[in-house]
Image 1: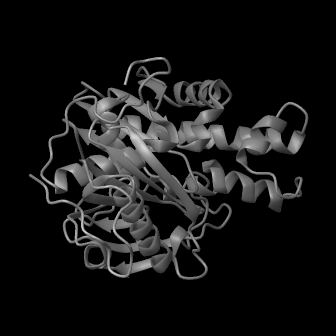
Image 2: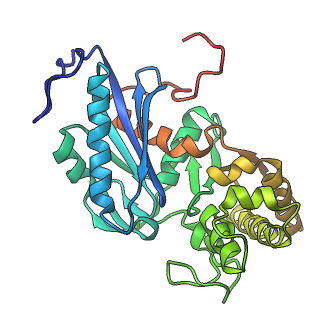
Image 3: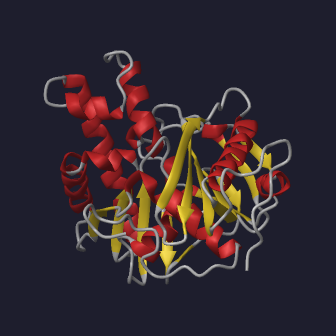
Length: 335
């Protein structure tokens, strides 16, 4: 039986006694950090979104968000059993270290130790794309498959290779960094120091930067660019380059891994057929002698990494993760 929640140092007691268990989940992105309190049944009870502050104190901002989530859970009458924090970059999940993440300015950050010191809870640290793969395997577009590949398309791009329900981390915790696969050798510079990376052309952040750099409407993000494709020739050009580059990258992954399915997630995948149709066409065109695997949207969209973080938190806390856990309840469903 879990202990009743006690008052936090320097605070008043919770507004009501803790009556259940929950887990906390944080997905750290290049622009924002998304935090959530997940109830026992796998549904989000509370959520918080804050700027990443990558140019200021991103580690401090993350620790503050974790504390706020803990406080929010206790004030809502549920006791946190554990927390999962996922980030991009090179993440040593066994040691709880973020070795390098260029988009959020993390280098050799002992994330598990820091968050554990702050909260006193079991802490799981993971890679955002691999965590998203866990969510898709448990309850999403990869459920029941022996193998699949997931690419979340956000500020950056990473791939997760999932075998028998578990993501492959690689020898140096670097598996799946396909955002830095050169699709245009000698092309435009990437923040990683290479040139012509997939991320430069086909990530949400890369799309916006290319469009602005080529003289597009100031301040237009990837959603705005997608909306302008029919009326803005530059938006059309940037979008076509992105879908072609992504199709070429998927062909390389197909020939290397022979996945049963390719799942596209992240904010950019919310463009739907406008993204999927030309990407599927580019993938088929790049494969001369074999059929292309099906390319489908994520079941969780931009929330996949956060759901994966919650699943990792439950595992760290020794709690069961039933198949299907974390799927949103459809509108109109009971509970």
